[in-house]
Image (cartoon, rainbow, N blue to C red; front, side, top):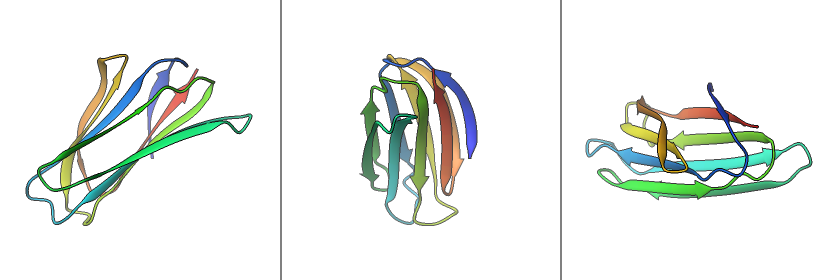
Amino acid sequence: MAFKGAIKAGKTVVATLRLDHSSSGEALVFMAAGSADGASSSGRAVVVPGGEGAITLVPEQEGILEIEVDMTDEDDTGQLIVTVNGKKRTSEKITGDTSWTYAIT
């Protein structure tokens, strides 16, 4: 799991997975936010090869935001992009299953 930094509570976070055409099958992208008092929210998207899927969350309390990508095969590739209030925060080429974590402050 890779820590990608902090995001302020109340901001709109969008995680987008662009799955390469050459991928062997679908991928699942999942995003969840949780706080110490047990409040949580989550979303998911299934993405086909050559397609794109996005999830939007607005974490309202301090806690943790996790983004998980589950590929069909560990050699499958894509681009994972996270925006905060419409501005690109993190964008990386990924291969295989991937986990990113952000602190919600």
